[in-house]
Length: 90
Image (tube, rainbow, N blue to C red; front, side):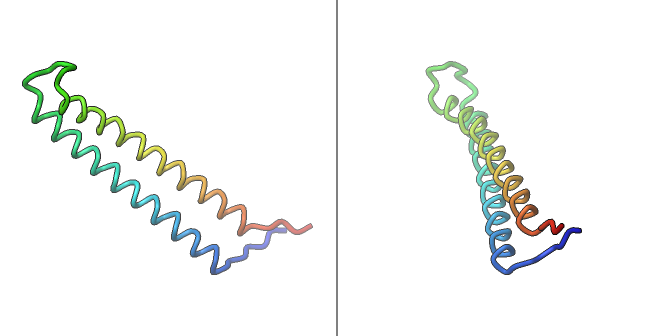
């Protein structure tokens, strides 16, 4: 038999997890935009000596990592929330 319980601290914790995911999602899109703009603006001199181009590529790669970490945190928080709210009674 399973019993579902809901607590106010659980709901608050869930909101914080969603807020963190939203923040990291927005941050990833901003980093991607900065990376694309920097890369396109400095495409004329395509070399590893072109620092703005290399920074742009770094921002684009970093945005993928930021999004991945945010998604992983969100999934862990959801799983934790589900395990806390579901209790098994024999």
